[in-house]
Image 1 (cartoon, each protein chain N blue to C red):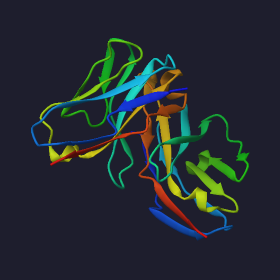
Image 2 (tube, chains in turn yellow, red):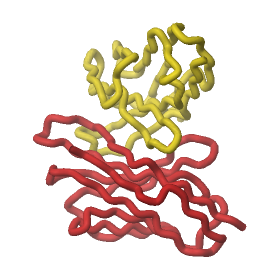
Image 3 (cartoon, each protein chain N blue to C red):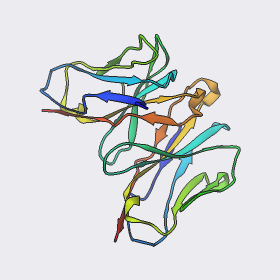
Length: 114
Length: 118
């Protein structure tokens, strides 16, 4: 079972560059999320989606964009990368509504902006 | 507002000791869910348990047990006879839907780094 797959696992960007973190899940989950994890700060929600074509902002959306054209894919776009976006990014999906179900996480993508 | 506090930043124990990780949460919602996740050194996040606000029964799973007390807004996690493989960061998380309008967000605590020494 693939579960939630994120690519790339590691990436170094220069300030001002753009990139897309890819996320795919094969569990037919409607709910998908992007979190970032900074050292000692837990995970913070960037964006989430309740289904194809529907996305909404989380706690820390500035500097990011998302789209959800299919149930399976939920890419996260970084425009004009900044050092403050150096973090580990986790994509997750869930099968139950209103936060009742466990989140299934990808393995994370470590991004460094220099 | 939803908030999860894990006051213990780091805990070190020696193998076979029991250890309790504290979690205190805040929410005004009457229906909510609490979770614990484990993040081993490899970095992935592993689901351990989900508990809803209407079920205050304690739960035991092998060496793991959870104590949920609504009166103190706490959802503590105990590892009995700890092992080196238990070394990880443990996150407590809360999901609530105030007024039914917020869907599926998990609010995480900052995590507790547990180190178990042989």
